[in-house]
Amino acid sequence: MDRIEQKRQQAALIIPALNEAPVIARTLATVPPGLFALAIVADNGSTDDTSGEARRAGATVVRVPERGYGAACLAAIAALPPAIDAVVFMQADASEDPAEAAALLAPLYDGRADLVLGSRVLGNAAPGALLPHQRFGNWLATTLISLLYGHRYTDLGPFRAIRVETLRRLHMQDRNYGWTVEMQIKALRQGLRVLELPVPYGLRAAGENKVSGNLGASIRAGVKILSVVARSAFTPLH
Ligand SMILES: Nc1nc2c(ncn2[C@@H]2O[C@H](COP(=O)(O)OP(=O)(O)O)[C@@H](O)[C@H]2O)c(=O)[nH]1
Ligand SMILES: [Mg+2]
Image: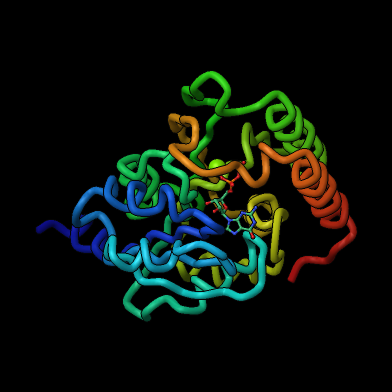
C-alpha cells in the first residue's frame, strides 16, 4: 500500500440526512469499498427510519435533534475519531456519485489544495437536477463573492473534501443553509488553496428535495446564503 492509499484510509464520508429512509441505503451501497475509513450519517431529527437504514447499511449514525444542514455537519465533525484526517461531505439522495470522492480527496493528499469542491455547474448536471433558481442563486452568490474576495467560484454545491485540521481552523458556525457558502468564504479569507472539480449531478433517486423542491425552503436558503455573504464583508477575521 503506498503512502497516499494509506492516508486515504483515514478519510470519513459525512452525509447529513433528513428523512432519507427511501434512499440512504442505496447511496451507501454505491460508496467504493476501502475509500473511506467510515461513513457517518448525521440524522437530523428524521421522522422515518433513516437511522435504522443507515446503520444496517454499515454507516455510523450520529443523531442530531436540531434540524438544519449545518447543525448536522457540525455534529458529525464533533463525532469524528481522532485518526480521521480528511472528510468528504455528500448528500444522502444519490444525486452525487461517491466514486467521485476519490478525485476530490486526491488534491488534498497530494498537497495541491486545501479545499476541493465538486462543481455541478462545471460538470454534467442531468436535465432538471440543477433548477433555474439554483443556478441563479449560485450565480448571484458567487458573483458577490468574486467582487468581495477576488475569486470566482462556479457553485455552492455540498459535495466537497477538506482536511480535518483545516476544517477546525475555519471555526464553522452556520447551522443551516449558510454552511456551504460560509466554508467557501472563510477559505478565501484564510488564504486557502481552493480547487473546483467538475462532478456529475443527477436527480435524487427517491424521496423529496427539501430545499430546491420547496419554494419556502428555497427562499429561506437564498436569503440565508446572501446574508452570510453580506455579513462576511463586515466581519473581522477570526
Ligand atoms: N433541508 C434540509 N436538508 C437536510 C437537513 N439535514 C440534512 N439534510 C440533508 O441535506 C441534503 C440536501 O437536501 P435535499 O433534500 O437533497 O435538498 P436539495 O438537493 O438541496 O434540493 C440531503 O442529504 C438532506 O437529507 C435539514 O435539516 N434540512
Ligand atoms: Mg439533494
